[in-house]
Image 1 (cartoon, helix red, strand yellow):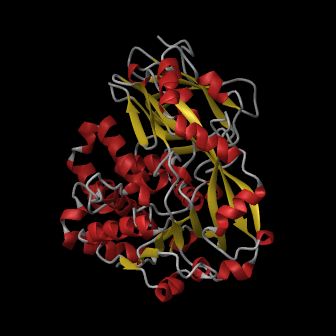
Image 2: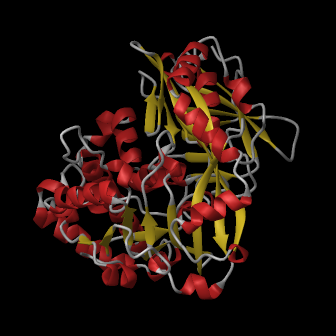
Image 3: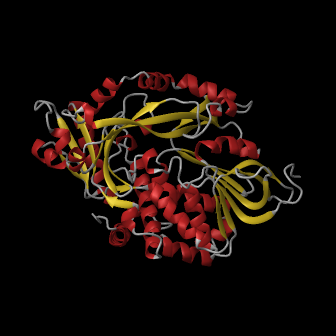
Length: 500
């Protein structure tokens, strides 16, 4: 029986923890699939999308593998593996379809949260040029990437990214790929638009300044949840049939607090980030692309260097980074005790094993933390040879918690992806991890619903609704060029994007 309360004050169908893009997406899908469902969301901060979903805490890239080189590793035989790139691109196409459907239903003007921005991969040196050409040749054979361009011609590259090419050694081997399908997404604005729409629906409630302090499963498989209202001393009590933990870095501790067997052994390793932000409007106006390079050996995927054209609060911006850092906080607005407090008897050994096996990452983070302002400007000039240090200021970016999980072979493994951990009885699910995160939020949410609502997802009513929201649901766009053409054309028309 519950040790939180014998008689919770309120009963709900679904209780979601965290007001970021994932909770917004899960709540939206639940209310679209079953408008009668009673859904409640709790957020400990006084605002929606205050952590990782905020536009200043992420790259804003619609991650579709158009420019992210870490999604396409080179095999030992010199060929390039595009499997992850295909999966990520299909997931982003799914996200665009839901966002299009919501925009058609009056959620918000698309230009407030998504805009077309070319995605560019840029490399230097003979070895990386060979890799990029092999990558392009492998990708363009797939319908998802057929329109991607490749060039080693300096005049062409100067048209694509003039600031990157100006002042560069003319003898330096260079190459780039470019895709007009690229986007810049303000995930904070998107999250706020989704919650604003949800709040107009009966049976939905969003509570800010409310922190979940405890959750215990009852004999009838419901969950008793204790919530602290920051404005009053007495805790609120809820009983929920389903709980989703979408609380970013705090999800590790909340999953542990749930005591579900599937959550045993999980730990977290926090990695923070910093941006160099351009303050010169003339420089900002001359660059219009997201230019991604290759990460250093041992660097986490979130630290892949990139020069990003952004739209923040509707205004053009230019950011470079992110530079990695380390903090024991699990959230940007968290506590320095987050990491040590998360260590338990179940996850201590996996965390130690993962630490030993990732010494290159530790060295990389130490180097990043010890960087001087001059070091960061030097890294910027690898992309913008003529960059003026006075045009750029350093700002703190988001805090990410990478997953550490048990491994029967190695004891513990550090993961850089996104993982859903679900209770065996389908009454609770937690989202752990960071990358590619928000861009794949719709696919991740749909996978979660398949895990936790398998019978209802198979009903004709839910199937019809899903087909209207995401026409490609259940299909592989890489294998159906005609369907891909149709869904891209629809999304391009609704969202104001390029279709090819």
